[in-house]
Image 1: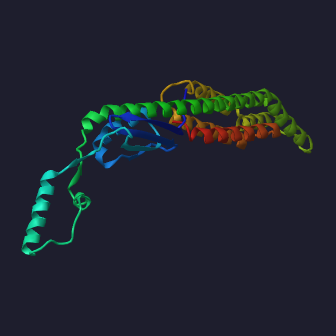
Image 2: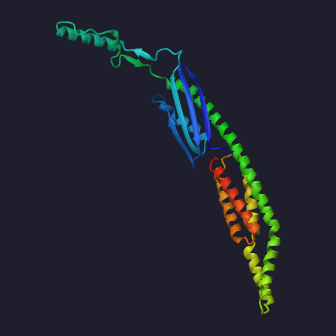
Image 3: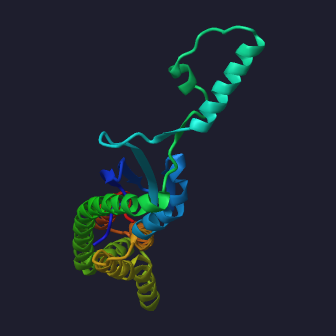
Length: 289
């Protein structure tokens, strides 16, 4: 089963005192293009995160965002720098002594606002990492499930179009004897209008040449083979987007040759129908991983 490159996955939960939320969004791209947004304090997780996403996604433009905040039940993440407060108060008293009197009154809130008095507690990223990465695994699982569901829809559409191409090929193959007979009949009718008698051996050579020039059996066989190979490829588990794209290029080449060689209105119509089906498949394959 093929996978779509479009995906969405999210997961959130509590890791110790923190509320953690992962958001994954992906669209089609020629190769894996990862745009990662992590809080500054968790930059150390970047390599692990990129590795996990690289294992799950082989192609696509992926945007991955990690948001976190203190949960409501958490204690204060700050610590009080009592040494700095003591230094500030000593300095304030020294200033008042030199000024021979108190300066403007200050409150405890003023002291707490001084840079460095309240400091954020140091994070133990190593302790938080397992829980944060476990939530990433959940988000990735959701995104992959999304991709597989859309991939199944793409595969069903491609398989349906392949069957229609094969039906058109069989129709043209069934008409080939009639087409060749018609070419011979038209040529004989034109020769009958001539006053001079044609050379019989030369006539047969020309008929063989025309038949070879307008013979599309080889193109039809290759179209049938390519569609069968595409249907087989749709059942594989590994990424097959590039392989499908190559097969469609080959199918389009054969359809163009079929149209250019056509000496019959019905064959031309079938060639146009096949090209339309190939273009419909190409649009879908652009989103296949």
